[in-house]
Image (cartoon, rainbow, N blue to C red):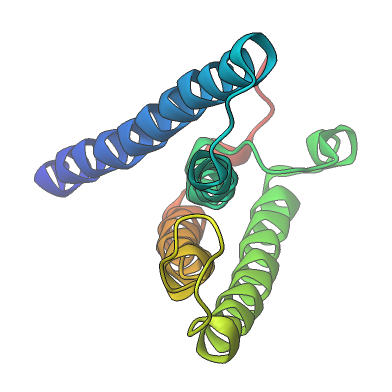
Length: 165
């Protein structure tokens, strides 16, 4: 079990680091695009479209990170007032609802890629399936993250849900 946890931490670190690199690249490219446009009146449609795609990537890639880190939206003032057994049940329910929403998102993203993915982008001149494909791919990764947290919640003893001071 310890080897599995260690492997999971390594996998999450790689997953997280990909997002960090993408976000850092986005910041550099946006600054570069702004400087080039305002100081030199130079603009590239390819760069602009790539920045928009990179922004979408970092947004959807972050879904799984937020799930694993427990940073998803939650009204915890009510949650913290509950007894551990109720907290556990509510956590499990929360992850099931998150999974359902994520599966709908993933399925609709897949359908959208099938419908509009053949179009060629105006900026980078590549099939839109590469840009729209971000949604279902990140949806699947998020589903894996939700499943991990759901298994953790089910397997955790009630003591794990006690109030932390």
